[in-house]
Image (cartoon, rainbow, N blue to C red; front, side):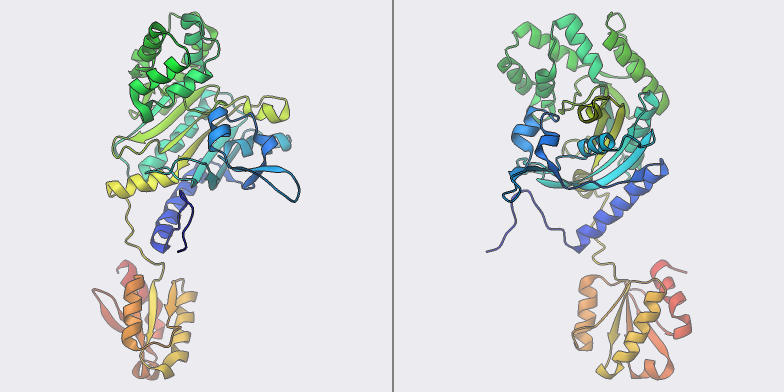
Length: 428
């Protein structure tokens, strides 16, 4: 029995039609904000990526394999940010700010479950070159506009800044290497409070320190209220983070944007603001996320270049939208018109009608199986053709076509065909 690997999927036409419609809307939003498209290889040299994404990603989640012909080691694209960093390092002449969007598949050796796959599509928009809050505000606004465009109502965008936690950890908790703690905190949504406490215990943290960390990451709400707790701390990282966040909140000014200190995001390359978008139901994980990574490009070029971006997770957007009834799979085919030849001898006339319809901009199919009229109609209904066009001896003789849909039936002259089909599809 044939099958496909776990965590990988086929997409039949109804799902692909929905996916392409969603991607088209996302691309439209990216272009509206002035982002330009680019593409990078699905494969990267392992040496190019090694040491840049963090221990969990590199030791557990990345597909890494040798090429037995060249003896090189490769990795499948884990996400779309490090290929951008590598590209900018290879092309230092790129005008800044460089605003690019990239829609492409990525691969992760996850344990497959609801909303989590081993091959999935990401839609990223990044701004390279600007260190200022305006750039972060713009990618967050892209995120919010995308969610609104799909009619998600119960979403929120959680925002934090890595520098704030790092500064508090240094100044008040004596923690100088926060990354292992970040990785534990990042699992909060998956394993809960007790699970995070257990992770911190395994890292060697004592009970009072764990209590302080858990108290800290429980803080969330409006920026004005939560930030007051940290204004007294004399730490450059804390001050820079609060000033940066204050500007972002003032620019974006959306009630769905909240300040949440439990948000850290798992990748080690984040250096400043980080954000994630989720819905209250279904509990499916983050639908989008991103943040600032001012030192990632410098790992390739030797010179730091500020950058920030957002990544929209199409798979989870679709899964959540289908469960909420925002999306559906009712469109089974692109076919606007299916032409039924009543008799075999009318096939030349059917082909003539198909050319007229296609030149008029309509997706048109006709019988290629030499089936009976009844079998053709059955097929047209199965694929979800929106209009059926009948051509037979009388239609050919009178230069007409009989159009049929669920609600309408009409015989029209060829000269009226395009306008009539448009009326059937879109109304008068």
